[in-house]
Length: 336
Image 1 (cartoon, helix red, strand yellow):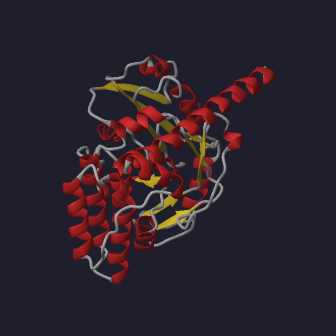
Image 2: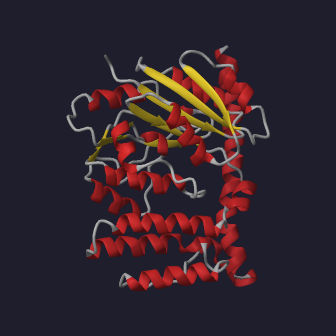
C-alpha cells in the first residue's frame, strides 16, 4: 500500500483563503491523503463555517480553544494517522503534484530520517505571477550545512515546502507552544537536527501568499521579547553543532541580521545580544538603515526612519496586492 500523507492546516481568521487552500490539498495527485483543519475558536470571521463546507471522509475539521498556532498544529498532529506529514498554512497553496513528486523521491530513499524540501515563491492572488528565486538552501544538504547556511546567511524555507516522515517528528518533538513568534524557525531547526539529511525536490512547488498589510506589520513588528525567545532557542540549536569558528560566525551573523528588531526600542535585549556575540568572539554593529531612509533619520531620528523602512514597503505591497486582486477577478470573469 502507498504511504498515507496527512496534510495539516491550522486556521485563524482565514475566511478569505481557507477554501482555496483546502482545494489545493484536495487536488493533490497523491491519492493516499487525509486533510485535517484545526480552526482556532478565537476567530473573528467565518473561518470555521467556510472550512466545514469541505468536511468529508478525507477532510476533518476541528475547532479548538484559542491557544495559538503551535497548539493548533500539535492538535492536528495528534489526530492524524499519516506516515508523512505536510504542514500547510491556511492561506498558502500547493502545486497539484507537490506531494506526489516528493513521494516519488522518498520511494528511492531507504532512510526513515531524510527530510524532503522543495522550492517556494511569493504570490498575491495569481500563482502565475509567482517567481521562484533559488537560494543556497535549494539543494541536497547535510543537516549541519543546512543550518549553517540558513542562519549564517539569513535564509528561509517556507513551512509547506517540507514533507516529513513521522519518525523525524517523533525524534524532534512537537511544536513548542511557548514560542509565539517565528515558531516555525525554531521547530524546523529541530527537525533538521533530528534528520540525517535534506533531499531537495526541485519540481515540488509551494505558493506563499502575501496576505498581510502595513498596519498589521506595524502592530506586530516590535514583539521583541517573543522574538528574542525564539532566536535564543535557534542559536542554541546551531551551537549544538559544536564550537567551530564557522558555527560561531553563523551565530554572530544571525544576531547581526536581526538586531534591527530590538534596537533601540529594547535596550535590555540589545545588550543581551551584544554580550552573546562577544562570548562567541564577535562584535555587533548598530544596525544600519537603507540609504533611501537616511534623510528621514537626519530629520526625525533613527526610530522613525526605522519604522518607515519596515512599514512603507508594506503599503507599496498592499497597492500591488489590490492591483493583483483586480486582475485576478477579471481573469476569473473572462474564464467563466
